[in-house]
Length: 202
Image (tube, rainbow, N blue to C red; front, side, top):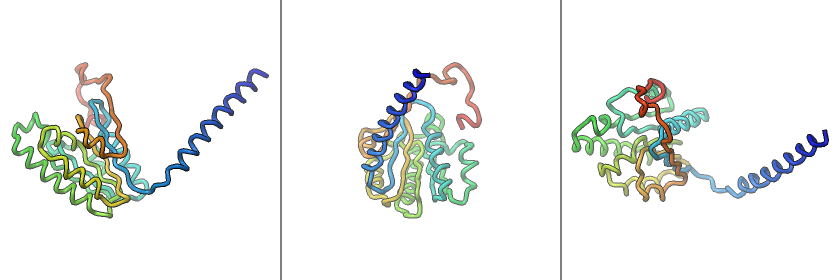
């Protein structure tokens, strides 16, 4: 019993110290504004994480918009689900993955069209959240110049949150955002010959 009491006392002491540190961090975070988040890397879950934030935002009654830069050639579960929601404006602007389109100029034209829509949305104060899905590929393949995106992030309405996804982000974009998460690929079913699953990959 004494050992149990000692363990409990040690646990309470540790948790008190943790709480004090967390309370200090919370007290120090006084700035009120929207954030920009970059979800990148070779691992699975970048878009899925972004759409999780979309669901959270809708739970708070927020107005949100999504611009997809690559997935125009396929119908996805997230589009089917969220596109019917009154507070979601959904724009699937791409023509499919670049290895499927086989037409660089078409890809560039589609990217520019998608960016024009994204820039319009990012200037509109009614949106609480904008998701720019797979946008990093547009800079990686040089379909778009990065500076207009950096400018739009800097000049967006104060309370707007923006989430950007994709692989191979430019350092300028990493430097510009508030939060950057690198998602790694430690293991993936596809590499073992397992077909992509509806509801998991699309």
